[in-house]
Amino acid sequence: IGHNGIDLTLRNIYNFVDRGSIGKNSDDMSLSKTRAIKPDENGWFELLGDAYKIDYNEIISVPKNMVGISMPRSSLLRNGVTICTAIWDSGYRGRGESLLVVENRSGFRVQKDSRVVQILFALCSEEAVKGYSGRYQNVM
Image 1 (spheres, rainbow, N blue to C red):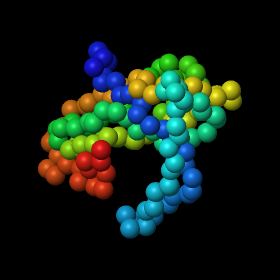
Image 2: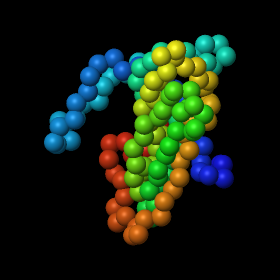
Image 3: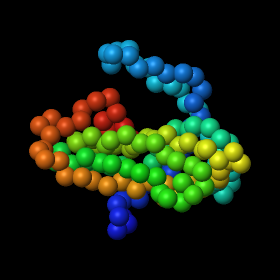
C-alpha cells in the first residue's frame, strides 16, 4: 500500500484475437477472445505498439459504501504507455482487468509483478443497497 493509493501489480498480459460486441441488452454482449503472452525467463514481456488486456495479482474487495478509481502509474505515461480502466463498482470482489495501450512506436518492456496501477477508494454519499452482482463478481 502506497501513501497515495493501493498499488496493483501486473499478473498477465493477453493479445486480443477476435472482435467483441456490446449491444443494448446484456445478452447481446460477446467478449473478445484473448491469448496469453508468455514472458521471457526473467519475467519480461516485450510489447509492440498495440492494445492488450491485462490482469492484476491482487484481489480487490470494494466496500458497499465506496467506489474504486484506478489510474496508471506515471512511469508508464513517461514511456508512452497507458492503462485504461473502468470504475470498480461498490460491492465488487475479484481480480480486475484493464486495457494496456502501448503508444510508443519503439515498443515497451514490462516485467511481471511490476506496479502498474494505483487504485483509490472514494466514499459514496450512500451505501449501495445491493452492490455489484454481475458476471465478473468473484472472478479470480
